[in-house]
Image (cartoon, rainbow, N blue to C red):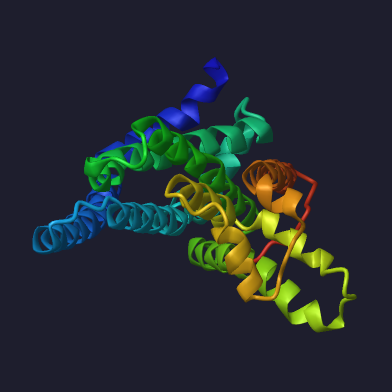
Length: 291
């Protein structure tokens, strides 16, 4: 662990001195608390008018807060890795890293750990906003924390995408744009591809629908809908697009998705290590090299 300290310490010190992390935390929590307060106020006002205490609308607000937070985490995560290597190349410090005793594995792992710490702080800071709609119960605190932990492998996948893209580039702007494009593609392609190819498939079903396991939105949506008492929501949404995977797949979609996405994450990190290893390259570099 002593060899992991230098880059992690430097990255965390730089981020702690800046205002980016506090601003992001404040903005994310402000959005979530706004949704929670306004939604709760509307539900409580309706209860006063009808004299009926129904907790189900509060669960709907809880689901909205969860999905909003998760989308924001997906949008924020690339900031912390898309510039990890390409930023070092832009400033001319990457070659200095290669002359140290740090190996390419050390460089990638340390930068990933520092990025995971920053994103993890943002996720944990949102816990009070997650629990606000649960003032009338319906979901236990333990279940809400468990759902929050599910954000970690999904954010790890997005961070890995950013690290892979950054490892092949010289430009921070291009790395960031490509990372966001890859994240959008990962969310949309597993849905669009099976839908577009369904007319050409046999009646037994479209096997491309199993690509949905790579979609980071799917396990979180499946978990939160089960918590609020809508276990069949995933199957209903897929049926609206004409996709009906077998029951075993939808029943264990959370576990399957997490395993597939973790495997994809480590594969991307391995490619990132290859990209920064002198004399090796898994993907052609883009951007203008430093003179």
